[in-house]
Image (cartoon, rainbow, N blue to C red; front, top):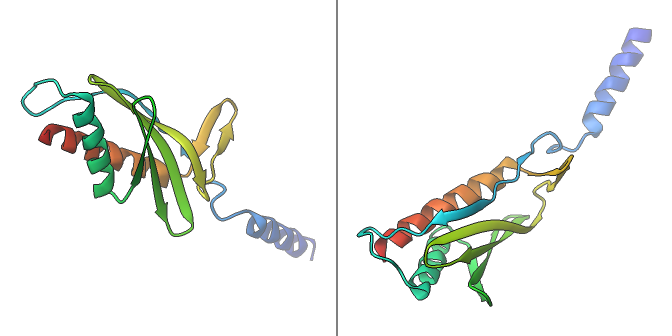
Length: 136
């Protein structure tokens, strides 16, 4: 009977955990990625901005141009959403986390963590921007 009670309590404690509590990974930011055109010629700021917005649009991210060579991108899928800033120059661009909803954002010690799906979204975004830069 005591074993049954222990097993019952264990089952209740496992059931009480949030479904996504264990599904986190280190938060992925991309810093100083190279701006590369297909022919190796330098791009101007407008071309880089257009490539970022076009690459984001292919992945259903909505874009808002901000001051200081920044494009803020928002992605929503069901109840989940993510917001990132893409800071750019004629030589590099960076993708940095701003905010999210229902993606288990938090900290593991001094390191930010988030649901691994977010990292997939950001990686796909990076790839799409790189493709667009090569078409400029």
